[in-house]
Length: 553
Figure (cartoon, rainbow, N blue to C red):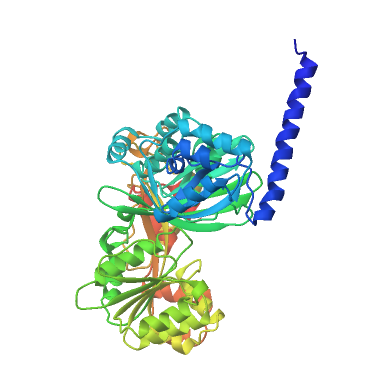
């Protein structure tokens, strides 16, 4: 009978032998000039295993452990073995391309053991994920809360990456989440969705499942699976019944592993028309007049996630007709617009905003959408385009509309170019809308009432002041309801401020004005601020005071 001490010693010897085998393979790998991998520590793609039958894999001493389209990652024990060479030649005839790496015998045994698992619903192809129609219908019908998604994940096997990804991605589409965050922690990985601009915790997934998910997402997004110490960016497509949803992937190294963020670019989220953005009637009327002009520049400003892309696309929809040519220059192209020629920045090939804009101008466009103004060359080229018969839409990073002119002057643009080129500057933010099904009445505190009165009293004379006393103020229900996923909010609405560049303002710009001087000019024009727009929406029962304070200040 083996004693406990003997058993312990045997186990230790076994671990030493395993380490020795891995160390030996590392040395042999350098001889063959192939990379080495410990197959016991990296995820194996079960779908990829099916490419080579188990009998052939064992005979050839190999395993196809990862696949993205026709690109394979193949683990081999001895690349010079005849049976191995025959299998590789056969894969080449099938038009597969592959990368080899050396593994130990125990690593291959581990991979062969996983042949017992097969994928079911999720199909992964290079650059795309296709979820079965039956599953999409099931998610749309049954998933009504974050808790429902968490419960589904609780019953998924650690190694069933197919089912886990299906739930994570299908769930995000079912509840209209804009982002999926997978954040490794000491005990596992935290899974979160961003809905209406706010992050919500779902669950903690196991370390094993996290590794499988990371590997699959990297491969599908065209990222390097063996790079863990630097950030990477990629993208893939979700094939749906009636539309294709683009997903932007970002990975970032952290203390417990790589953080993953998936940005869900659902076309239906940018299908808004100008009339549905949430502008006050007089602001919408002024913007429609500016968009109808044949030339000039319209600038939007606001932080990331403030809805600038949605607004710019709404402008394009407003001006689009078969008689004009529209070209965009984006970084990257987030949504595809029918009838619009869209081009994407490629800095590695020298196609940046400045050079790309010069190329676009040679294509004789009527309307140009420029993703962002970042430097003086791009700014001056776009403004010259606005002065020579083109209508130009673009964005610039400032905190408010009044800060745009000083910002342009600060990066080196001459005031005598800015003044005649720009038609209007617009700043915006997004506020969550109260769920109409469960919102409840709210009485403003003394401090809230004071701030509200100040904003209303300071409205320009041309704006009708609402009666604060008779207005019904609302707040979100703490428990929420099924319609709003128990958050108290459903959807978002924009708050805006605009600054028209008219004759009197042109003279002001030539004198390099301060932000305070421009704010006074805005007031003289009868324009409201973002905070005043938000206050009007609070008094209209669309959003609540806390949301306004959180987003606008």
